[in-house]
Length: 123
Image (cartoon, rainbow, N blue to C red; front, top):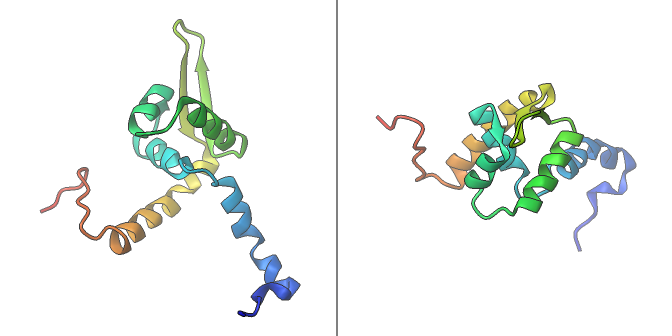
């Protein structure tokens, strides 16, 4: 049986920031939601539904609310008919863009080496 490295409380405490981040980003779609909003700058609910193939409206609503509550997103409600709501990254969300970029780079290198990004020239 493998020894539990976290029997030492000091080692366990060192993982608190990572487990906190994991709990904030826990959700099948949250990283992709952040990615699309970072890439397109502003997203409306319907645009996200179209981009996130397979997500339900209730799941998108829940995950957008959680990301807003956790400080990653800003929701702007316009008093129009029909109602218009736009999502943008907050300052905290903007600070996460380098991490999203690093995750994309790592994924392309190690998980999808043959992937050709349609948004980048392949010269």
